[in-house]
Amino acid sequence: MTGDDQTAPPPPRSLPVPVDLVPAGDWRTEWCTTCKAWTRLAGSMLLLTPDGVSTVGSWNCCEICDDPAGQEARRV
Image (cartoon, rainbow, N blue to C red):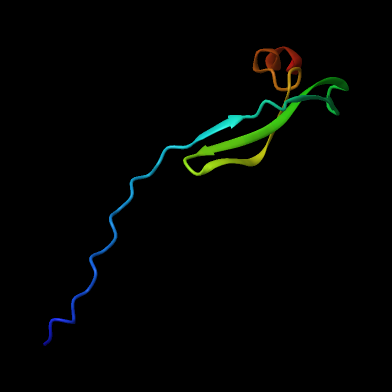
């Protein structure tokens, strides 16, 4: 056995980094095809990481159709 048979140590483990998923400031009003009104809001979702910002998707909701407080009254 020679002294040249040394192996490199394993790389240090990195800890998971928390990331934030936030709605972007580009929200807009759209037509809701369910309740037939301009009450749908839509926008982009941003992923904030130590490497930078990425657009990862979009979100949308209707202030009439998606209101949990008014769901029971309309089902009756």
